Image 1 (cartoon, protein in one colour):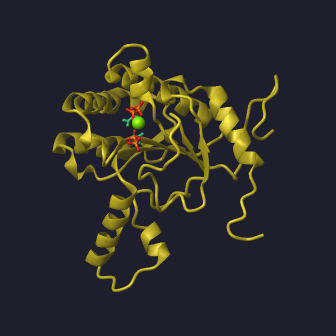
Image 2 (image 1 turned 45 degrees about the vertical axis):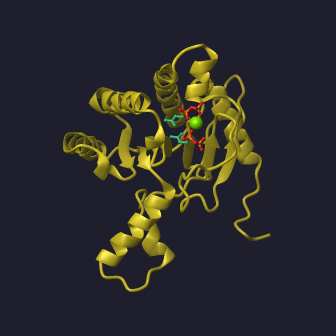
Length: 238
Ligand code: IPE
Ligand code: IPE
Ligand code: MG
């Protein structure tokens, strides 16, 4: 049963929904509502990420992308940036590797050149070790959709291309080789892309919810999936 759930049967997706992406927004507001510093929201958001990742794998999703840190998020106070980087480092140390019974292929998408060599080496090591796993988890970090497209074009110029095709760009972006997201979910109530997956989202279905990311649950995934299956994807046809 697609996008619906009854007592016996879990929601299961099919090939129409291979790739789901999340703009995990609302951590700061979630914490502030509780009189806590924004950083408190990020650590709870990390728990939600693990829970939702596990659930997406269970219902048959093959690719999941999460927006963890944008190219614009460097504008935040240094203390908050430090917390987010520490959280990332903790995840690199253990969680990404162990998270879902070894079935996860971890991929970092974004401009990684800003990170220290030691961090980049650890990222490359996890990517290598998990390369053959069936569930792809893209962590978008220092990610910006415009940066990604410009980076892809520069890569093609370096390869000596004089003119480029859509296929060339698709093969040069950070998610090269993966299907485009079918469904992009944004929590936190804002209705914008904030520079996420600009190239890949050309025909994605969007789902916006006011629920703040730390409150986002498996049932919210079910609701997004049900909404997805109720949509008619025409791709410009009739
Ligand atoms: C999203 O939550 C997480 C990151 C951007 C890293 P926010 O930190 O943007 O939370 P709000 O939107 O301010 O509530
Ligand atoms: C988008 O959220 C980036 C991430 C979730 C990592 P932001 O909170 O940075 O987006 P804006 O500033 O509200 O557009
Ligand atoms: Mg936000």
